[in-house]
Amino acid sequence: MASLRDIKTRITSTKKTSQITKAMEMVSASKLNRAEMNAKSFVPYMEKIQEVVTSISLGSTDVTHPMLVSRPVKKTGYLVITSDRGLAGAYNSSVLRAVSNTIQERHSSKDEYTIIALGRMGRDFFLKRGDHVLDGVVGLPDQPNFADIKDIANKTVTMFSDGAYDELFMFYNHYVSAIQQDVTQKKVLPLTDLESASTKLTSYEFEPSAEEILEVLLPQYAESLIFGALLDGKASEHAARMTAMRSATDNAKELIGDLTLSYNRARQAAITQEITEIVGGAAALE
Image (cartoon, rainbow, N blue to C red; front, side, top):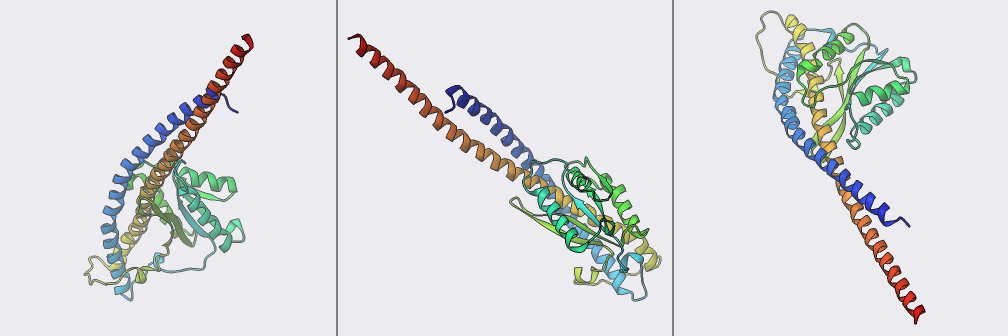
């Protein structure tokens, strides 16, 4: 049985741990509020640029662009959004598991796919597996701006145009609520799902031509898909970390209660033993 000193030490250390997890929960809750606002405020822009792109590409039958056309798939790109740190529950593992299962189902060779990792956890995971990590970025801020991923987003779209891969899928956690984040797979390139993604077409007059507008607008649209998913993922990350730290704090409190009970029982047993020894000694002197 553990000594009174050992139990007391465990109670003290567990209390300190609970204070840390409680502080981390409060920090994540503060970050979540802003991240949720950022993700929601980006939605109107995404909807508008999607409407414009869809109206131009589907409204003119003679308009074509390489980003709108499917081609034979020799290599697939997977853009995976994870965090740089752990302590976020199943936030990272759920995304990495989904990507791993998809790769296992679709591919028989590592030469058939490549990885673009946004986040240290995803990058390190695929490097340890021996997968080809084509590019990535780590150290993104908790509240990212488009400037933080402009280069990688532009490079990701350019690599598709250059033939580094023939299709690009994106995996991230979609923020539903503070207690629910759903792993989401979205096809980014080629942009063949525009018709199903939009319910209305708007007539536009173009100056210059529709082809020249799409030449500029389509890469911007693809880059905005990546940025929108990153904002969504960051909100999910803060929510997952807040929930994980809350659960850790509750577990610490429960453990403190159990240890305190054990401490009181051990202390009572020690006192009883001392009383017994005193009574026994007094009886021996009579």
